[in-house]
Length: 83
Image (cartoon, rainbow, N blue to C red):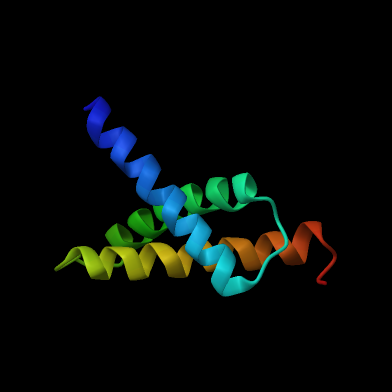
């Protein structure tokens, strides 16, 4: 149980870093990692709601990166004044 949680956090952190690079944010690495973990959780939640079954880990990663990018975009619009 603890190992699965730790692996999820590490993968979320990597996804946050990737999403930060895609979105070209000037947030701190820690901020991108936190938003990546939240984006990964959001991706899993939305995937379950929409009945998107991850047929492979690649599908899960793409969904998590897309949701992390969405969260980074929203963060930028709300807290940075749309710059």
